[in-house]
Amino acid sequence: MSYKKPHLPTKICPGCHRPFSWRKKWERCWDQVRYCSDRCRKKKEEQ
Ligand SMILES: [Zn+2]
View 1 (cartoon, rainbow, N blue to C red):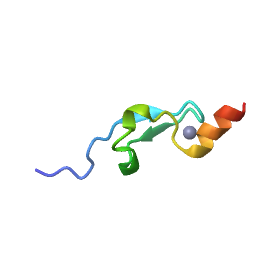
View 2: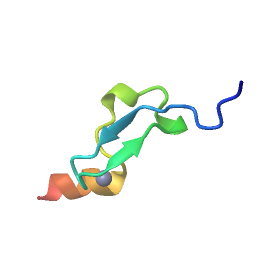
View 3: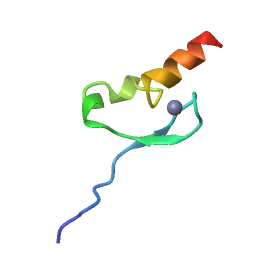
């Protein structure tokens, strides 16, 4: 038995309202991640 698609946690980005999945760079701070990218985070702050 092998899983080619491991289940990764996902969240909905409040900036673009799209789901995004866990990434390696967030392994230490996934609980604090809210936006899918810096672009969405900055866009939200400007509005
Ligand atoms: Zn986004």
